[in-house]
Length: 323
Image (cartoon, rainbow, N blue to C red; front, side, top):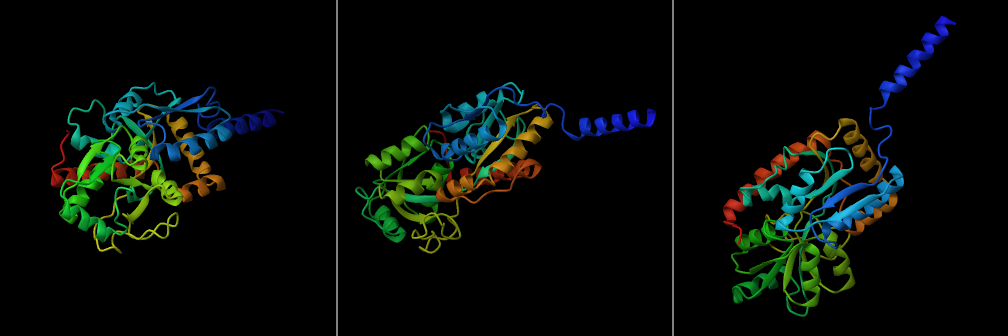
């Protein structure tokens, strides 16, 4: 009998310590994903389907809270100050690795105030134009038009310091052209104005642009990637079109506030990994021009640090400043 009891206790110990404490019962109430851009942008294109899938997996609501402003830094600040209790997460983007070079007085640090959980999507950028305002159908024609009319073409962005903005600045450097920049409070409003004919062009992530290009409301000129994208195979790459070294992608990822319990962080990472393998998610990502990423945890943290350094050089070389 004594041996039987001891064996039972041993089994219970294995069960108890085999699953991370805290993650076994979590979550017991809805979770919030802070998206630091307006609804309808590239971040939303990936965050909302993922949130819906995580709801099914976790059995609790996953609420998207859009809080725009200051190139995505306003929402990031709020997220950095959220309670580290496993019920608040931050949907960051490549823009947040650029922000430290443009906002010297940021009240948060993307590298130290958050725990990197996982990249959820990484679509390339694309140059898109309003076909009613811009007659160019190829990249060569667009560059020639920009050179013939300095400061005449207007490009929109998701905000100062976003990848949309810096892609435009890099384009100007590489093509020796002058085009005017109009920042918006997110990719959604910028895209709305492009479709409406208020601006000429955008350097945008495929998550926002692919559906509009396929629907014919805007024209895809060139993809800023080494290879064509299956979502829009008829749009050539910048390299194919004669513009070398114009490779720009954006990424979207989930972070937790620092001090969030490690078992909950690991549980969320596991759930995201599983969600990204669901066929409906794979199909949605393909439509929006993104592969399924595998970058997570410490490797993702090192990637963020490398991105901060990479974009600092671009900001310096382009002489980008807050307007």
